[in-house]
Image 1 (cartoon, rainbow, N blue to C red):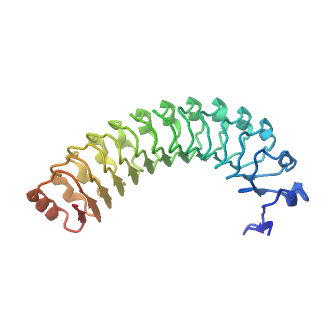
Image 2: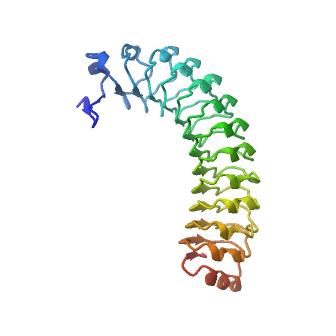
Image 3: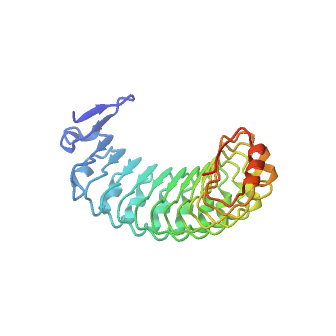
Length: 309
């Protein structure tokens, strides 16, 4: 089969040849795994194209003419060999989803900030060292994925992404998060594990919408006291850091269900953990908690499964 019909009766074309038989009617073109090493010029005849999926090929560049596809809402170029994106990509004013994961990008065009309708930007598994400050203009962005790159920091301007809900930046070399990240009041998922973080912003407690936070495999020695104000938090992963203590008010995380603290340097937990009434599981593997303290902790959170070993 070269085409399929979705629930809204829009065909997905899996063959460029078939698509060219009725170019004006093509809305969705999926050319994944076609062993393409150049961007097919014929695609530009599909002037009504709204979704172009061309992942897992061998493309090395995207032509400047990409801007001619001005009705595109989704462009997926992941799994190719692309080194750079043309500045003209910023002229795709209707673009809502851009995925360029698993390529060889070292940077983004400064003009990326012109994609003001973008909601999802996927850049994971590239070689990106810096994000341009113009990313601040992407105020409709809901999800930003920059995992597994070569980032040492995130731009201060990231705090302007007022609609951001998911920020995924694990597997980089980030040592500190910008204070402006605390402005992301709609953020519900923060993934910055496997970095080199030594501290968190003091006002991180402003991120009241957070439900899941992954901070494992960093270099954190402590958590700011405001962390205890994240009262919608359900999942908190902090294993393999260098934590020696937790904030006294940690028990204020009243909706916490999963709490992973293994492989740190904790000797005790604050009395306030009695307040973690929804806690289902806590990992305390490979800390420095003695038998007496373990008995005390068992009594304070009797309904939680505790992993000691």
